[in-house]
Image (cartoon, rainbow over all chains, first blue to last red; front, side):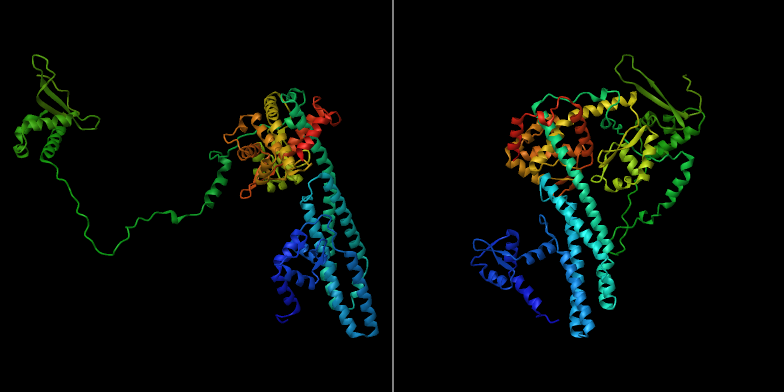
Length: 411
Length: 213
């Protein structure tokens, strides 16, 4: 098919006046103005606009029906497709095809075959569209109308329409179209694939809709009663601001709505000590995937690949005083007798050539004062107090011995 | 499914098509219901269904001395919630100009409600009355927007609404509403103080109608 077929030309023209069509569809009426005059003329030429009252125009019924179907627009008391009419047309076309075939009019036969194929499609599409509308109405519980009375009237209307459709399909099933088309393979296939095989599904869908409509009718009655109850209670509460229900909990058998069980705060945790859980826990442990990705690989920070000299490490040398102290304590720890710090200072001039005696004694005293440390030696401070108390103590010597040595005996 | 259903029921939840569709559908199968009921019965509870089958919940198997305290607690909650919930339901009906009471699954549009309340002084008055129902309805922002937000928040907290579209600020009524109607029906049948329809003051009814539309 070329790009300039009459259908594509028409659609292109309609595309150009889409704002006018949209306005006419949604406002239900269109007034001619300077802006839309050309569009109105063209739409009238294509017989898509009909004159309305007071110099206005409206979309033609067939075009509006097309838009409703395409846009799934909900219409109040939607009339649905004339499925009975489609069936009648199909029946007549099949008869005419049979006569043409019998008379040997091949050209007419071909024309009727094309028409029959289209008629079969029309019936299938009409049923499908009708079902879609019905299902939409049912699923929204006729949301377009607010009052119960309106909903109930809508419900009754659609119930009748659905029942009519169910009856039509039942009759159609026995009409024997299939047998009449059996001689023509192409038509028989169209009939079977588009209609006959889909009939059980159509019937089921319709019966579901009918069932729901019956249920809704029952529910609407209850909703109406409930709405009245609610209004009455609301009125009562408004008139009696201090009113409270009686203590129905005190009755011997409380009403059902009072018997709500106490909510529990439920938290779950695995009981690892229960032997019966062992296999389950093992399974869970085995199901945990190994995750090598979690291992942290410590890598040097990125940078230029230049062999740089390592940072110089500063090592602090032990002071001579510290060295002497460690040597003295080592000697004292291994000695079974008390060792005098002052004597040791005198006996080791090599260690002590730069350390004054008072500094040495102060260092030993400082080390002896450190508490709470595990050490292999103990100390005794030899001191004296002046005759009058001035808060000072004169330390004369410090004696150190191993921890196992007997206590110091005063001379 | 069994574990999820049992846990939700033990926690005091109402399982319905709106709040937990898959669990609700699972519980609609009789075998599954029997299984859950059998489990609950071992711990003194049972599986209960709201009158119109919109929700499942756990109720006591029998009311003994221990259960009485809980029954009392439920009564206290019923007394506290009766006014705000009735007020909210009638507010929704008035805002939508409908004479049908909301049912589980019905949509509550915050935007639509707000427009209706802002444009209608009677609905604004109704909204203001919520403050007198308890401190949980108290708001620092006394505008219709602030008050409506608070009311919806409290209804959601009480389990009557569930948010289903955050962008559109749209909620749906849950199956717990069916339980609430059970309570309303009971009160209407058994509370002798509440006048039946024919005894209602015609003047008041007239006012109601005028206010509504």
